[in-house]
Image (tube, rainbow, N blue to C red):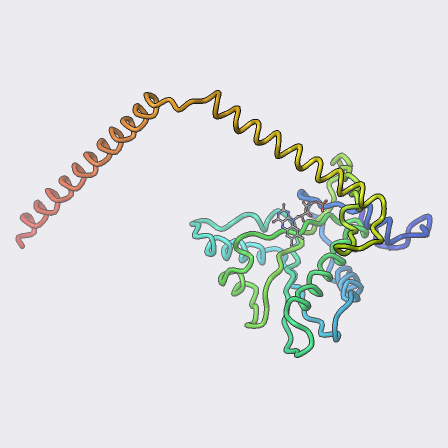
Amino acid sequence: MTAPVTDLAPATPSAHPALDAVRARRSWSKVTDAAPTRAEILTLVSAAGRVADHSSLRPWRIIELRGDDRRVLGSAIAKAEGDDKPSTKPLRAPLLLAIVATYRKSDKVPRWEQEAVASGVAHALSLLLDEAGWGVIWRTGHYTRSKAVAKAHGLAENEELLGWLYVGGKPERTRPERRKELDARPHLDRMPGSDALPDELVHWREKSSAKKSKKSKKHAAKASDKKVKKPTDWVAKAEKAEKKARHAARKAQKRAANAERARTRADLERVTSGD
Ligand SMILES: Cc1cc2nc3c(=O)[nH]c(=O)nc-3n(C[C@H](O)[C@H](O)[C@H](O)COP(=O)(O)O)c2cc1C
């Protein structure tokens, strides 16, 4: 595995280290068994906690899951999902950091703002871990806010999970995955009716609406083609319906036979037990 950077200063100092770190980051869905120590994480959590925080409520906490803690989570996931066997999902990384939003009482800061802070901490921590050489991916599931999972983490009434950062070593032989650079233009918008619309945005809007109408025309043409090309095959439909009915009848017959067998067995048992 690639040795994590413990000395956080790069060899050649960059003029834009934050920009470089954000551009270089990626998620690692597969990681090795190596994991940062609690002391290492404490440094990074302290830095991540510097995100903007309305009224400094610190509406979050992070729970470290190592070793068998992950099995406890696996069992809670199974309970939440109604499965017989514990989920092995939490075992995909040696360390899971559960991100908890801890809502504080405040007249000024609503819950959604507090959740935004907790989410910001998770993003910052994920970036810091990546920069320090660790492989990270933020994961959730349908079970994230289930009762069983909340209980396993010992969450209080005013707490909710935002998922887990799965952390481990970056596998050495993984080919560097290139992420396509994001085209920011459609994401940096202006207010409706703004007369200061940059040319590139006007151009973008025209292009994307032309693309959309071309797409919908193509879709409409395809749909009408389908109608012409594929008339309903009533014979095939009837055959399919008959087949389905035959299958249902066979199933019903089987069920009746099973019921009859059970009844006979019950009678026999009653006779032999002398009731
Ligand atoms: C709140 C949140 C929940 C996520 N849940 C999952 C998840 O359950 N499974 C998954 O494969 N990716 C999940 N992702 C996305 C990954 O963390 C990751 O961003 C994605 O695979 C894209 O990779 P990249 O970060 O390298 O661009 C989640 C991201 C966020 C922010």
